[in-house]
Structure formats: structure tokens, C-alpha cells
Image 1 (spheres, rainbow, N blue to C red):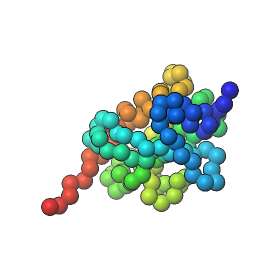
Image 2: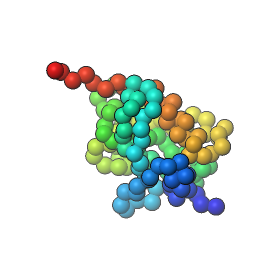
Image 3: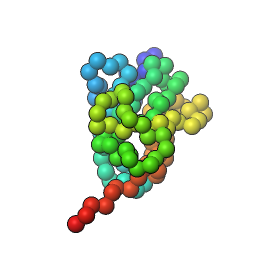
Image 4: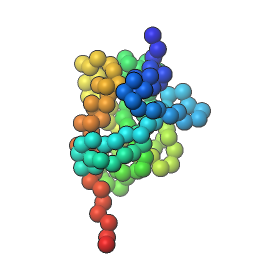
Length: 127
């Protein structure tokens, strides 16, 4: 059975999402993600993941967001991006109980929906 990024990408496609793959990488993918809940509900971002080679045994470490919606907002666990390059935020928020899930992409996306509630609200623009 397939593992790693190929398996994750296949499960994304089954859910109607279209993963893309950065050049020169065997573990990175990203896809367009509609934030369905939380303070940024209704926004669409590119969501990037570094998928371990042993997925589904191990889940992705934490999501990457483009555009950068968290930098400079005082959020814990937000780091300068290292995997995807400029223009991306990395939020170090691994799945807290991966071993208790069925190891599916659906289970990981449920984790992301939980994280949506913690995203910072959009900054108000001066008129």
C-alpha cells in the first residue's frame, strides 16, 4: 500500500481537493483550503504540509499557510517558514492524538478545522 506524500495526495483527491507539489521535494504538498470556521471563516488560503514518508503512521507536523496570516500576531508556535520558502507561515501544531485516529487525511483535516478556531482575526484596515 502507498505511504507518505503519495498516499496523502490520493486521499486529498478523493475528497475533491487538488494537491500541488513544489519542485525538488518528495515530501511537500499544498492545496487550496477554504477556512470553514473560526475568525477567518470564508477565506481561502494555500495550505501546505510536509508529509512524513511513513504517513499514515505519523501525521504531518503542522500546517503552512500562504498568505502569511499569523506572522507578527504573537501566536505561540508560529515560525519563519523553512520548507516552502518566502511568503508562508508555519504553525507548529502537530495532531495531539494521532495514534487514536484512523490515520486518514479526513482525521488530519478535522485537526485543521479545530485549529481554525485559533487563527487570528483579519486585521482591520483603516478607511
